[in-house]
Image 1 (cartoon, chains in turn green, brown):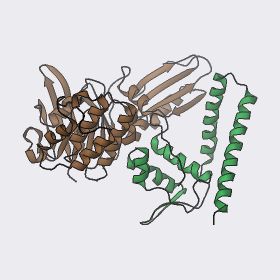
Image 2: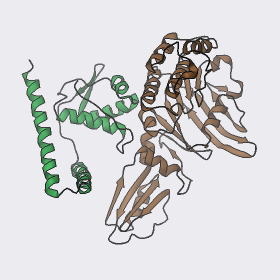
Image 3: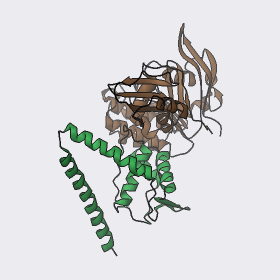
Image 4: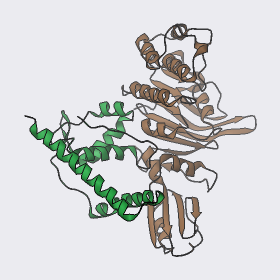
Length: 141
Length: 306
């Protein structure tokens, strides 16, 4: 699996949620394909140097959210995709991130159009990356 | 399963000074416990009583079911203790330290000793007295792990270590607990390390146990609310579990322990323009919880403790 995880322990985002976010991002970006196996709890925990129960919890929540599925005795796999965010979540989370972006822009004395250009560019970059990794995967036999 | 550590009503005085007051704690097998608290809050004393180096003034402590005051050699052999400060005989080489330590134990896994030594980039011919702090910690850790103890008690093992050595220490701890029956109790001031590896945390403050829960439970029990107002915020009302409140021109930041729907209703009754809970990092939550401000009457415990 080509997922590069990184964990920031001192963050205000709990570690299990950071793991969740990175798996979700990997799925959305096509780095993790439907039906692909994710690393075993122990393996991921030791490579990230975090408690295995934290990884297990992240996987559990992702299974509950329908992002991953557990196959008896064989491991945990990326599930068939399905959108499962509450309307509230879709409202609050982007707004919080946008607030952070605006703080940053104001600190750097950037204007609103400049901030928008940055958002557009980041959006386009991500979309291109997703496109590329999907092209790569589809070329494979 | 039988608990590995049982502390019941432990009180310890040095002379007339109370160090630990009425501490009760149970540690089941297979868990990594982070033992937190500011300096001088009784963590080391608790560990020393637990391992039988000090007599309790009142109360009782047990390890593997045996009274700490009368631990049998067989039970002691199941405990690995890394005291604060990484003490070694400076005139010995790394290999000699290993052989010296091995002579005290019936079982000694030289492979583990060698692996930890290598992990910390030590060689056997190095003189213990010439090692850096991080290397010394590695040597002590190797000496503690090689007998393959079932219970590891590490008293501030990360003290003075650089980030790389700290990471090695955490890796070693996770490696040890690959075997499900292994238990670790470690004290630390490095909350980011604790957050990485601990299953549960125990927080002491002024000799009193103030929390016994998971990291996430602790974080969600200490919560900050940002209340925005048009103009000056009203005075902070009487709130159960108030840890801190901070006022600005049009904003009130209130940190609460164990907030309930009722306390949230009290906040909403202040009629703010907006009221938002904010997630806190473990460090921020810890500082609010045991810092100087606020009352000290709360206890955090998981509601449905198994």
